[in-house]
Length: 285
Image 1 (tube, one colour):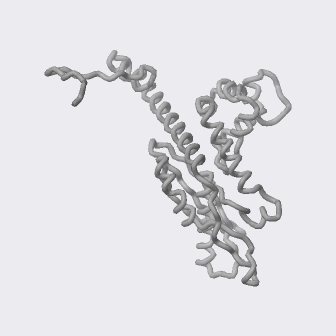
Image 2 (spheres, rainbow, N blue to C red):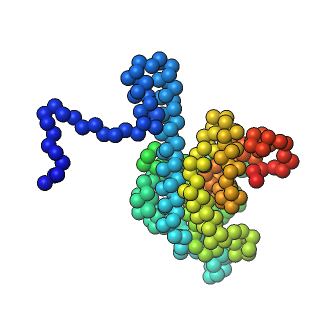
Image 3 (cartoon, one colour):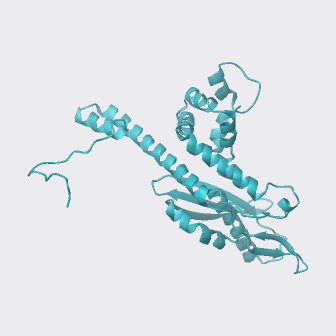
């Protein structure tokens, strides 16, 4: 039996509101008969506020997913021409999805795939895009393109299918920061590429840095979006060097800053908006 006092007829309960949200401010503006222009500005502010909170939730959930997702074991083999020795191993897309599906659902993620053919003068490419959606509304897209191998010993349909499978697998892994165990391919076996363990460690450091400094990361992104370089630069340059290094992960590898945002952050204008003097070094330090 509940210990709460019984409500009297006609009595209503009032829940405490957060007086710091744009929604509360807009409600008070309407209640106070504020001009339409003021209300429209508050509506725009609320939209940007909700988008920022959704983006924060997206990367926090991705960080949690990364913390629980182990490197995927590769069970598929591609043989050399002798048909006996193994050229390299890989993880099939279906195998990857089967292993991570429960974690994606747990952390509120879903995804959609898109495939398009790009026809150039010399060759055609297949572009695969994975759109990752989070339950609170934020989404991110990751793409990967593969040229159609004209010389492959396959018919045209098989060539497109092979390129599609590979492109989708790589785009899916990049979108979620999923790495496979062991050597990724013959390039890694020859020492010409990073190991899966290195990729995994870099991604974990990146997601940890986002989690520990999410308000600062949001301030940088929002500042660049509205043209407030001084505010964005101040937020960035007050981070310690190790954190900046961890955050500076390319978007193709799952980094939080887009290519456009990184270009702004590498610009002289961005640097000078904080230091106030001309710098000869390029890129954020």
